Figure (tube, rainbow, N blue to C red):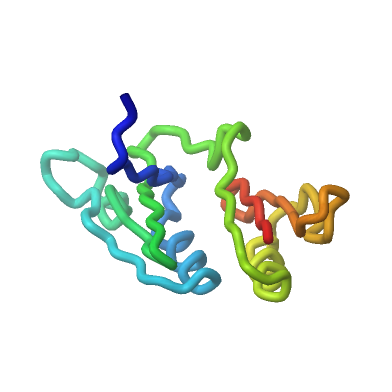
Length: 137
């Protein structure tokens, strides 16, 4: 039996640039960045140079949240498994195109944002942080 009160919240792990990435996304998507905790807790036993990194952060925009953190020191963050993309839906192609273009800066476009054969507007890309995005309307 499915529960009706479920939120699906993407959790992204970065290789030391989590705060930079969340700030970048908030500049594109709006919303607010909230850094809940950093690696400065003595229980984390993080190296001194890593203690300002993000242990848990959030970006809230348009009624949606993305959670994120920096990988534990010495760990590996791949940006994305390649199997999952964050999909954004917009009501009009003008706003969607602007967001697509900004997310694509410094990244790699997979499918250019355009009206597709199925009738909808769509484009997909991997941003400069290695995160896969789909933009639709």
